[in-house]
Amino acid sequence: MNKLLYAIFIGFSTITFAQKTTLNTDFSAMLGDLLTHSVTEVLPSEIYDENEVVFLDAREKEEYIVSHIKGSKWVGYDTFTPKNVKDIEKDKPIVVYCTVGYRSEKITEKLLKMGYSNVSNLYGGIFEWVHQDRKVYNDSSQTKKIHTYNKDWSQWLEKGEKVY
Image (cartoon, rainbow, N blue to C red; front, top):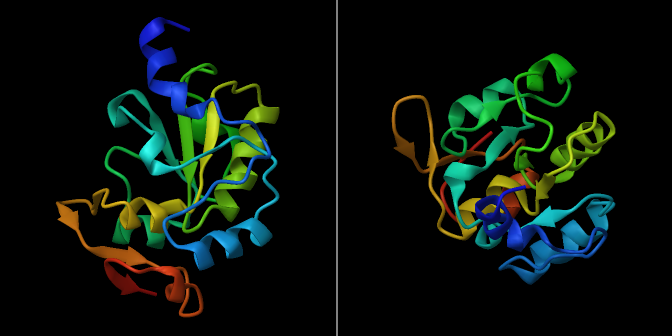
């Protein structure tokens, strides 16, 4: 891996299985129980150059349409197959995300089994992304709308306009 990518992913040098901390301690506690922490986890603040990372969205298509991280590729969760990522180099820096990190953790596990070597789960998902004042987009522009998966999960979204 060249020095530039190494510098970008210095934040990914976290120990696998280490639990991260989000901006909201109750949200962090919920994630601590929900996730298995079986893969490398990264917080939005640890991603230094968004242009050097391939973001994969593991939510369902209707969630992705509402908003997503700019430039992300939708791969889905229930619909995920190796074909969805066949055009991505195995050593390319990849961050997988979903609403809070559960579905993306499972897709990250699959990618690792498929031989991808530089893949991480976005801890706290798109919720933590917007909590840390990162921008999200729909097909035409920046938006404040965030699909919360369902009404129960919407309690964890503190910023943005809730859609479910």
